[in-house]
Length: 506
Image (tube, rainbow, N blue to C red; front, side):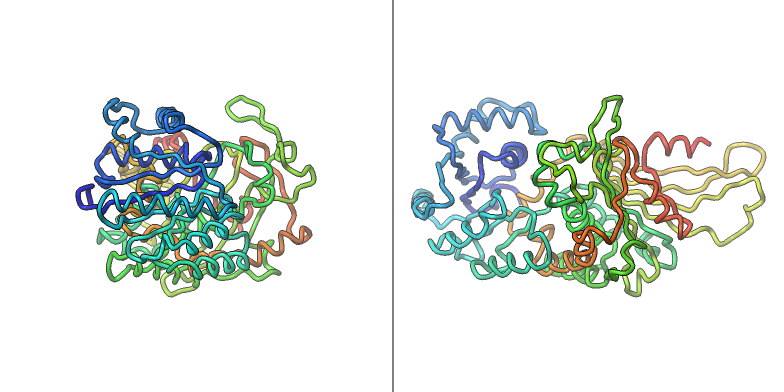
C-alpha cells in the first residue's frame, strides 16, 4: 500500500552508526521515501554511541546514500524533506536512563502528531545486546501494543539450537510472536520471492514439481570474497552456520513447500516449517557420506593473488572452521521422497552466484537415442544473484535436413523488464512497516533449521570426525564435493552464462 494508506510511524534504529545501517538501512528507507512507500508522517530516531550534531549525522547519512543507494539521481528538495525526518539520539544501551529518554521522545512524537504512532524497532546490534535492549523496551513499556509495535531482529538467531531456543524464550517473555520480525535478507531478494509466484501462479510447472518428474535439486550460494575484515567473527561461525542454516535452508523451503491454502503469512510460514520438519536428520555415523567441508588456500581471482583462510587477519592459524560446505539432504515426504537436494556454499570461489537448479528426469522415450543425438534432461535454473532470471532448457531440432537435436533456452530476465529492481532490504522494511511477516522467520522455523544441522555441527566441532579438505582461491571448490554427487550419477550443474552458451551452441 502506498504512503497515504500507512499509519504514522516512529522508526527506531539501534546501531544507527554501524555498517548495516549505513550500507543498507538508511538507503532503503530513503528509496522507499522517494518512491512513495513511506508513511506521510514518520520519524527516524537514529541511536548511536558517538556524539553527533543533527547536521553532522544527516551529512553522514547523505554521503552513505550517495555511495550505496540504487537511486543516484534525486533532488535536493527530496533530500531536505527526508533529512528533516532523521533525528540522531546519542544512546548508551547499557544505561537505563537512555531508554527512559527514548520513551519520552516517542511519547513527544505521539503528542505532536495527535495520535499513538506505530513503532518499528530495528535491532542492528551485536547478539550480546539483544537481551539488554529487549528487556529495557519491555520495562519502559514502549512496545506493548501488539497491533502497532514491531521489532526487527538481525541474524544470527543463536549459534546452535540451544542458544536459539534461549533467544526465542527471551523474546517471548518481552513481546508477542507476531511482533517479532527475524530478518534474513535473502528472503527479500526478488527472485527468491518469485519462486512462489512461479510455482503457484502457473499450471504448467506445479504438476511436475515432485519426485515423479524431478531428478535432483541443487542450491548454490558462492562468493568470490573471503572473510575480509570479519575474520574474528567468521572463525567462530563458519559456512555451515553462516549460510546453510539460514539462507540456503530458507531457499530450500521456498522450493519444496506445499501449496498454501491462501497467500497469507501464517499459512505460508506453516508450510515452510512442514518442510524443515520433513528434512531427514543426518545420523552422526553418516556425516562423511552426506557432507564435505573445506577451507580455501592461497590462489588467484581475476589475476589477483589471494591469501589462504588461515593467513587472514583475525583467523586462528590452526582453525578448524570451514569456508566451504557441500551436502546432500532428503525431504522425507510424499512429494519429494528419494529426490536428493544438493547444497553448496563457499568463499573465494571462481564466481559470485546464487542459484537454484531443478534437474528433471531423463526422457523415457528412446526414439532419439540413435547415436546422433545426445539428449539432455530438461533443466530449470532460477538465478538469484548477480543475474536475476529464470531459464528453462529443453531439446529442439537443429536447423538442417537431418533430425539432430540440440539444447535451447527460454529466459525471463528481470533486469530487462525492470533494470531498477528494489533492494532486498527495501522489500523487507516495507513489509515490516505494513505488518506483513510472510518473508520473516518465525521461532519454530529457526529452531527446526538449527535442528537439521545439529548433528553435523556437533560432529565438526569435535574436530576429528570429518576431514577438512582444501581448495585454491578462485576454484569451484574441492574435488571431494564432486564425488558427493558422482555416487548417484550427478554432477554440479553450471549456471555460468559462458558455459551455458557453449553447451547450447555445441
